Every structure is written in C-alpha cells, then in structure tokens.
Length: 151
Image (cartoon, rainbow, N blue to C red; front, side):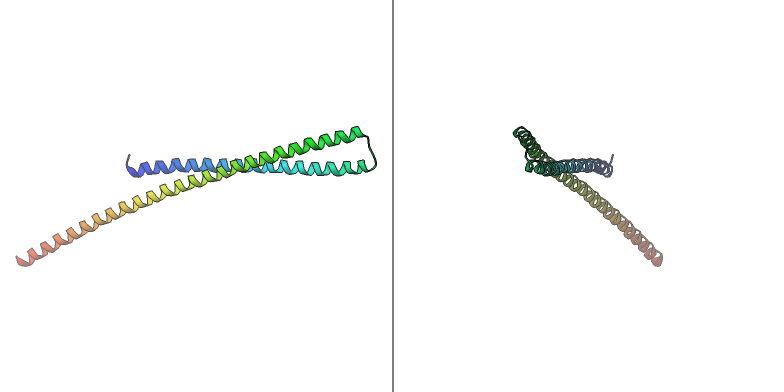
C-alpha cells in the first residue's frame, strides 16, 4: 500500500472518529438541555406550590399542615439543589465533548492538509519529470536537426 492510500485510510479513520465526537456532542447537548429543563420545571413547581399554599395559610391552618408544607418545600429545595449539580455536571460533560470535537476536527484538517501537500509534491515531481523529458526531447531534436544540416 503506498503512502497516499495510507493517508486516505488515516483520513477515513479520523473522519469516523470526528463523526463519533459529533454524535457524542449532540447527545451531551440533549442531556444538558434535559437537565436544565428539569431544573426549570422544579423551580416553577416550587413557585406554584408556594403561591397556592400561601393563600391557604393566610386563611389559617393547622400547625401539622404547616409542618408538612415546610417539609415538602425543603425536599423540593433539596431536589432543586441536586438538579443544579446535575446541570453543572452535564454542562461539564458538554464542554468536554466540545473540546474533543474540536480536537478531532483539527486532526481531520491536519490529515487533509498533509494529503494536499503530498499531492502537490507529487504533482511537482511529475511536472519536473515531464519538463525534463520535454527538454531532453527538444535537445535530441535539435541535435538531429544540426546533424541533418551538417550532412
């Protein structure tokens, strides 16, 4: 297998790795979006719950019901705090996926540039050979012409 075929195989492999990184980035983005949406839903639910029960408490209620309310709001706050941690974790994974994709895209670009350089070098070598062959043919034709003129 010649070098250009090896480079083509390398490019194909690197493009596959880049495509995998793109898929991982999409998945990480979806997971980060889902974690954010869940956090926002928890916040909205807590606000709605507080508003709904706030009116109830203005009218008076038992201490037992108030404790249940406070306990539930406390658990909601814990869930929100946990979800914020999940969002931060997912955002960290998302950033790492972005960095990996950038690395893979850079690698693909480097291999493509190497292929372009090798192709250019091969063309230049071929052009020099062609020019040399042309020059030699012209030189031989000139020598034949001189011999014919001298004879």
